Image (cartoon, rainbow, N blue to C red; front, side, top):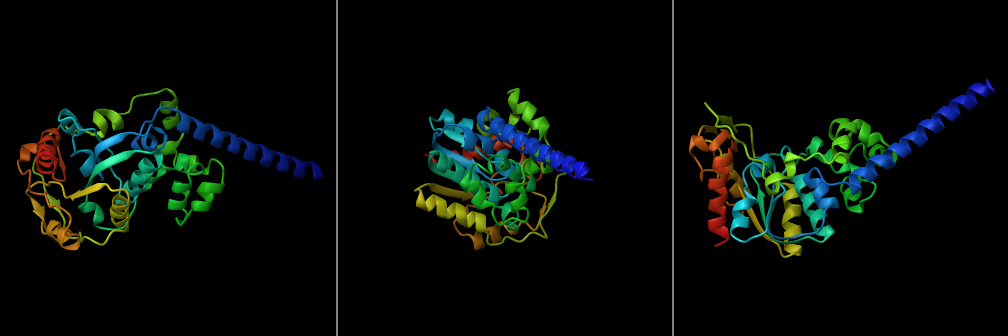
Length: 290
């Protein structure tokens, strides 16, 4: 019986050591390898000076074209992340500034993403490789339900979020496989043109958003010009008044949902294709950066 107990203790110790070793190895590779996503770029990349950056969800990622700003002699980067919420955008902004980035202007998409104070589980996972290294990230997430497991259990976060930060993504990171997320200065163009497009916003109601309030506070403290905008949707939208309600809630938000209306400019009702994105970005460039 005693031998069996010792065997179990030895097995548990071996598993624990293996977990610590794997955790250390994964974290080291993610921290010291070439970034494959915008969160890694903000955390491990070199601090840059930007005339303008863009933040938001896919409606930022697919809608803001930095190259048009660059062609005018401005430094620009699209840090919009598909599937993300403003909670992740606020943390990304803090990481950039903590790294030493200098930002003159921030254009942030504020529309469908203030329908709730929710978060993106998938986008959140991309912060977790640095959870034990960054006081900023750990303090930001210290109140989430499974924080103790993510922070204290070795390798737990890599197992739970295997699809995002597990073995497959580690292999691509180590192999320096190019990522579309960082091409075109962060802009991800949609190529197709949609048909019979429509969108139902009847159950959407803009709400005071804690993360957006955080972004406003950060910009004020760091003397960053904040430009909050709604971005275009196709014409066949139920409850298009939602966008006016956004402006009523936050009067500083510029409502540009109808700046682009041509159906040839949309990939889906909620997302412009590359043609539409260029039209919209040119509009923003001419309006705010004359």
